[in-house]
Image 1: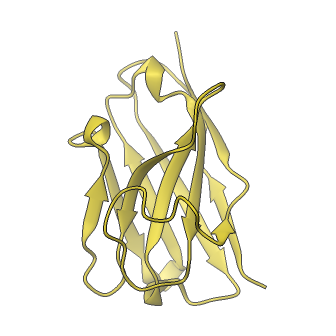
Image 2: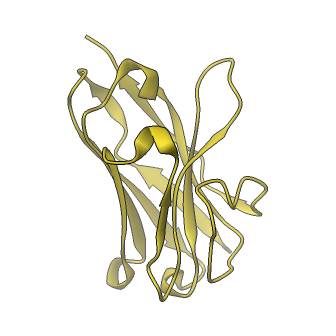
Amino acid sequence: QVQLVESGGGLVQPGGSLRLSCAASGFTLDYYAIGWFRQAPGKEREGVSCISSSSGRTYYADSMKGRFTISRDNAKNTVYLQMNSLKPEDTAVYYCATDRTRYCYSSSYYLRGDYWGQGTQVTVST
């Protein structure tokens, strides 16, 4: 059974950092591209970042460039999202997703993806 499980969310002050994890089970993650998305209350889901498989090529939404870094540890079957310089507007539920294809071509490539995790809440507030 294909499953994605996000973790690492929480409450952080503005300017702080969090590292989110997306752990895969039921398939070998290193063969596939993985995307991160987020959805704030009352807003549409938006693409945050995506990382391709063998090339490791990465994509970021403009508002995350320079602050967020996506990476993968194939040995742990996990993709990470390091988030620095967090702002209140980054508050959202963060999801990882894939279609089990090898390459993505934008930060929102898997917006209609077949496989999604349950999400992890990130709250940036004083």
